[in-house]
View (spheres, rainbow over the protein chains, first blue to last red):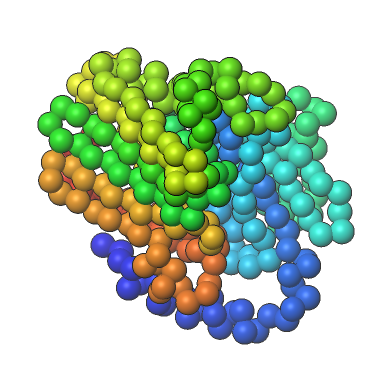
Length: 123
Length: 180
């Protein structure tokens, strides 16, 4: 069974990486923001958040952060995911599920192409 | 809400918004009762706000006038023949207690506690989870984790993924085959 002691190995690996990166990285951070108010949670935001976390962790993308936010005022379109890529306009995806999250991750976060099928205007 | 773990996530988000620095979540199964307690050291509520907080038409939100989180959790407990209490004091914090009858047909499953716990991880807020089933207990204290992390953010994707597995394994072991 995994224990807190196992954290040391992960920590050492991550610390080595942090030493190697230069300060300009902070400004180049991509953010994936998942709406996590009552409406988002009830619509399935938690598995979407965790899917993005696992995808980012598996790829070891240290310049991508997955965070939460509250209600964006469009409850019937939840789960809503906002993607902030440095130097680009915010992209808002709606009615996201874990499968769509995989697609958004592969095509947008990794590949740099917005997945237009899941944009707010398309629903 | 399909699982009580989602109600817990939702109620704990209130504690986060109330600027808590320490949030305790205690889940206890004993006999035919499941008790969930969420307490925080956040801003707390005035007596007036507290008296109407289980009304769906009360909210802290400014974009609209409906707040469903607490009413949904209260209903989820009371529909099983259980109970619901909320205590709060301005400047001291809030405690929410929900009790469920485990054998009620109307009780939602407890659901994925590990996923809820890691979704809440926050570098600035500490959580103490105490999970007890028929006397077997497991404690998850983020202060201990942060001590080990030595400055690496607890909400880094790699740490979240690892902690989710750690929690899943420990919870399964405590459950000992019982499906909650």
